[in-house]
Amino acid sequence: MTAVSSDPIDVLRSRTSEKWAEHHSDVLPMFVAEMDYPLAEPIRRALHAAVDRGDAGYVASANPLPDAFRGYTRRRWHWDLSSATLLTTADVSMGIVEILRRVTMPGSPVVITPPVYPPFFDLLAEAGASVAAVPLRDAGDGLRLDFAALESAFAAGARAFLLCNPHNPLGSPHSRNELERVADLAASYGVTVISDEIHAPLTQPDATFTPYLSVSASARASGFAVHSASKAWNIAGLKCAIMVAEGEGPVKVLDRMPFEVAWRTGQFGMLASVAAYTDGQEWLDGVLEAIARNLDLLDRLLREHLPEVTWRRPDASYLAWLDFRGRGWGSDPAERILREAKVALSPGPGFGEPGAGFARMNIACSPELLEQAIRRIASIPPGASAAEPGARTGPGELPAPTT
Image 1 (cartoon, one colour):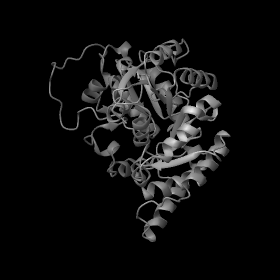
Image 2 (tube, rainbow, N blue to C red):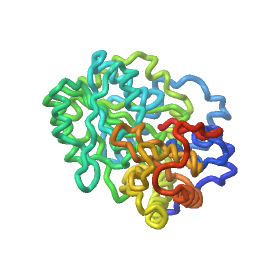
Image 3 (cartoon, rainbow, N blue to C red):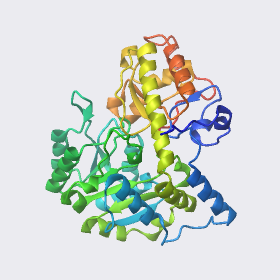
Image 4 (cartoon, helix red, strand yellow):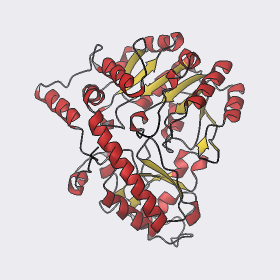
């Protein structure tokens, strides 16, 4: 498989999306989950054709995306959704919020498992729920779900569990056994599980992604999954996601959604997603090869230039969760790295308390940019910063939002 190459730096600098527009031009952006690769050709063709025919209106209630997604899940994960209900909306976050509003009461505790995707905290607030944080536990071979703590949270009244599968920022898909245990516990306590599976297509060929709803009747009876082509095919700005339900109760929830929930789906997002799921796998395989090579490179660069920084190679993303505690840079190393090295990473504390001392790095870029970023970071001396506490940073040097 031929790896996909990054766009040239002058093309990247001309982009107006968040990754390349948020910071001053002297900053290397390695934070937000956007990739530096050219748009997949099938998606490019689909969008150009839509522009040529002026097809920029509202998304139709009957559109080809559900069938395209069913075909993809069958081919890729042997997941048969022929009898499932699929409902589109603008993005995964919106899907999560709309489901939570219908399966929880105001103030209901909802479990999340930090360190976890920072917007999860805000999505619970938007849905009117409260956060029940159940941190992942160190199992010796990486961070894993803490089932004893999950059961305690369910027994204490949590009404829903917002599962991240594959887990962001770790890039680790949960195993079938783990997902079966989640489903059994949820069934025992009447808990709804919403599985955010946006990173699933980014699973490396030597790893396994298991869809939550595929593991058991218990999972299907009270669970939902939310998917999107946005991360894997780099089309987040086109606004399209898919909510999936198979059990009788969850299907009723989707059937009763207001019409506006589906109507918010972006027309271009729908068209691009159909192209991605139908004809985009060859491009994605090239992206996965490029990511694998950059993960190899990152491992070598860290060992050579930042041996105190530890990490575990992700199986399902282009995001590296880096432990900077050995450098002595405090709870938010990304702040110092941005100020002194002009490299923008995602601040670890935003992922919850277990993120203190960590930062997330986006490595979906050229090998040259990755090497430059690591060399810049390595130029910062270990230990406390010489900068005065509270000192103002220069233009473009404020930590960026994390998505």
